[in-house]
Amino acid sequence: MKLLPKLIMYNIINKEITGRWYKSKYKIIRLIGNGGVGEIYLAAHEKRGLVALKISRSMLSITREYDNMKKCEGKNYLPMVYELDDFETHGEAYHFFAMEYIDGYDLSKVMKSDLPLKLKLEIFIIILRIIEDINEEGLIYSDLKHENIMVDSRNLFIRFVDFGSLTPMGGIIKEYTPLYDRYSWKMGDRTADAAYQVFSAAVLLMTLILGYKLRPDKNNILSIRRALVKNNTPEALAELIEKALKGEIKNCRLFYEKLVNVDISVKKQSIKLNALLDSIIAILIFLLGVVLVNLKALTPISLF
Image 1: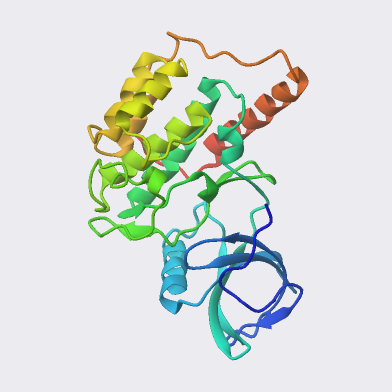
Image 2 (image 1 turned 120 degrees about the vertical axis):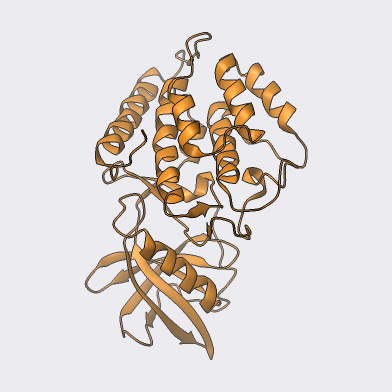
């Protein structure tokens, strides 16, 4: 489905914008993403080449996200951020920052694939390590979802995007997606604490295992457990996810420690090998590369 601009009512595709302060010129190529407070455009810069521009009417929102990314600068799981500026078109001011363009695909592709459970868990463990690293900075990544996690096709790194949702520990969650929000599931409030992060991570893992999403307005925690059992998820893993959703696992470090030791050998996952076998094997090899590259290249994180 083609994305349509919601923020900028004037056509800026194929137009050139110039930053007010740094005078950098960007030729807008196409819209690549949008959200509640901003839109992301693919643009060409005369020196940097292809970049992503996040544009917003809100100076506060765009500045906060820029500052959040600067706090985590140097981590290879987020895009490099270049500059913060603003421009004017048709008498209206817009604020933006330029960042590295990630050419790849989001986690939905992994969710919908026929990858075996073990490999999906390996990918999730990498994601969990990244989340823990963010939490150690005293921040909660509140808007955790498939669309905000990318696989970089250039080097197979797992990259997080949209850092506008970073919330200081103890603060109030303002940016979230209901599917991953414990309040929407009636399992707690929107305080930015470690347990909130564990909940959202557990929902993410649940969707990777099931291959689809459950809506909180039509389901509950028991529905998740039944769906996991119906999917032949190993009992120990289903129980661990349920505990994480109920707030019995207090932080992502503990979630990681329990997850790497969980027994998934009780019920083997079946892979549909009766069709497109060659394609599936190719996907397995490719995604295994994702795991290996990220485990080797991820900024060192102490998990013990």
